[in-house]
Image (tube, rainbow, N blue to C red):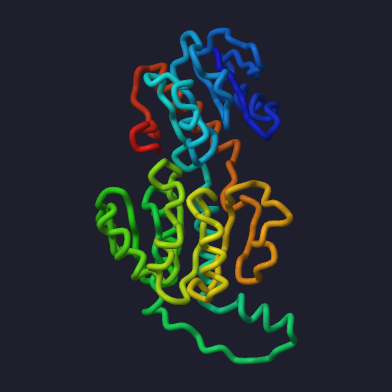
Length: 309
């Protein structure tokens, strides 16, 4: 069994070491430009097009992050018949739920405003929000979205959810499709984006969409920066329609020093850290799926290219 590894932006050695531990029978190598030799499986993060196209014998590609957009954006360089398999969770759901819950509670309990008052040495009571009027809308009801909903339900927040196709989930007012999108926004005081990035969702949160949120709504984006039209969001924050935002992802990363988000006190910036890939959990999951494929068994996480996730 031959496994090809490429982890853009990181060192491959820790991945190789752990793969050797769980798949001692495998022959492992790091992809280098010009490597066109056969391989059975590829374990990747943001691979170059030259790595995957026309490689003899390649049975499947395993993505080690939550989003597969970097692979799908390679287009025809990734053969249509080549299975692309994503991680089911690998510890990211809990991290994402922690991050979003913190951001929701910070806004709901008005800690962001108290922090600004503290900086100004201003002792002033702020009336608490009514929870019944504080519906949290989760944009995307996959594994991560449902895990976030479970965490917020613990605090009795009323929940909305939107997905591409209709779902029926206990404790969540579910909306679906283009026909349900505007109504979903109108009834969401906090909007949490955990959508996959596809051609349909790129730029989805633009001025027209965000304007449907209630006056004083709050945005949390932990999905992909390209979901949001950043200038539209900034202007809606500055004119007061959007009360603020917590953003972990951006159109350009690292966020440039001159970007206006840094100077807008109502926007909280974090460096794409909401949910980090847990290498050990991820490798054990990938190894289990490779062994299942070798036995001819189906595996979870197969990406539907027509949907983009």
